[in-house]
Length: 178
Image (tube, rainbow, N blue to C red):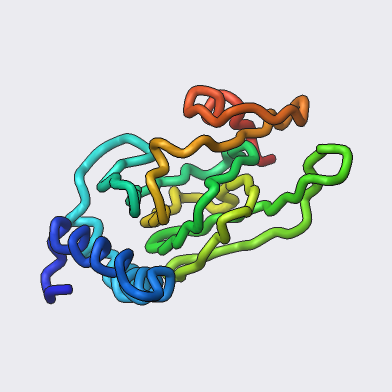
């Protein structure tokens, strides 16, 4: 990556990393470098009030810049592909679930992240996300596939019912994390 942060170069570098022999390791390395330059990254990203900004989507890689506001718990969902995440501002908590023999979700772990850090969620992870901090968290998400086209699952936190993922329900099922 060049000394000055240029978004189109970052996306090009990301696509090259996604095509490496070990794409997860290559993407994690690129994000480690990127989250260490949060101020430069923020100036290069498009200015928007949206919580999720799509930066790139293709068959092999989807890139989002995600702002997670404090105080909201988003419902359990999966991605059906590995996700490499680089947190560059704030903090985020992931509640990790497994499906029990009777089909119910059971929380099995809690992962707390504080910027700057890079992590991976494996292909089969089911998680809910929240921000217990006072300011929005910010992170670049690499989905190793076309997130816009894959069929995913979403669980209604009130009923525990699993259904197909859609953004309206994802945001509609969000609750306070208090």
